[in-house]
Image (cartoon, rainbow, N blue to C red; front, side, top):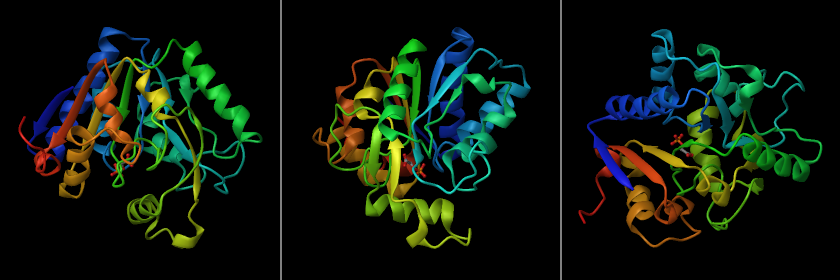
Length: 255
Ligand code: PGA
């Protein structure tokens, strides 16, 4: 695992976007795993600029990590609801790229049969040849995607309950000001599993801000534990880059 420490959020985002751009340049039909959250916003804005300057996404396939379950979105209009991760991805990234609609894969927030949907999603990843590069943030509770504390490190795509901390964090980042009360926030989600994520060929983990410093140190240098599912990075045998800004790196021990 390479740990890259950048001065601030802007430089972290520059670096992360360049890693993704290089993956696309070297394999124009690559399969990208994508994440939501406040951290990747800068990375996505830079990818949009790179596309304007000629970076071609027409053959790229994407799979997103997760989605809230049971959002009251209009069926067939998944972008209609402000707080869906589908809408976030559309607004922050997809609408700025020349990516083909049929190459975008998002967990369905309202599947008729959640179990069958999760199995289908895993199968689609396999059919695409697996994920070449997976982008990930780290949650305040140490999660990767919505693999909350206690999730098995060999878990697959499935329905999960959100932790109280994730509900608080996401309320602050995405719901405050929306008019939706915290009690009305979704309590469940569909997420790729840690086992699914670890099958990616390359990982790119980003974290920013002093709020993340303690959990970043635990994930990278503490025991590997299902209580901090991002600690699974230590089990990953492929090429992994962890890109941090200085505040997020502040609690790492030199080793
Ligand atoms: P954040 O979320 O980018 O909003 O901090 C990270 C995550 O939950 O993975």
